[in-house]
Length: 66
Image 1: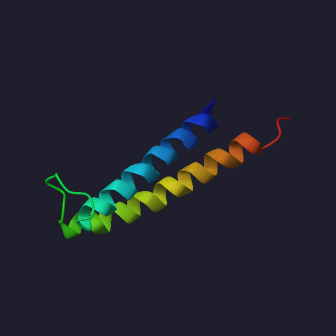
Image 2: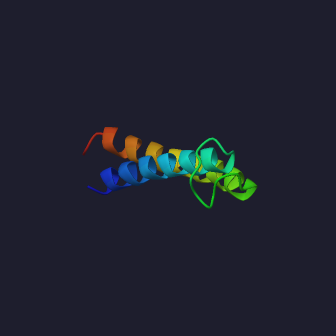
């Protein structure tokens, strides 16, 4: 069960990091974060952390029990 939590949390962090990056770069508009360089820096960091967390979750799900 814990592995699925890591996987879901990782995917959510990846999606959130991608959105923040696009907002920071000005690709996605309509937000206070749009065009702000800080979010173009924070977004990829969150995306990478999310990818690592998702990878840990995938490894735990695939790991044989026993």
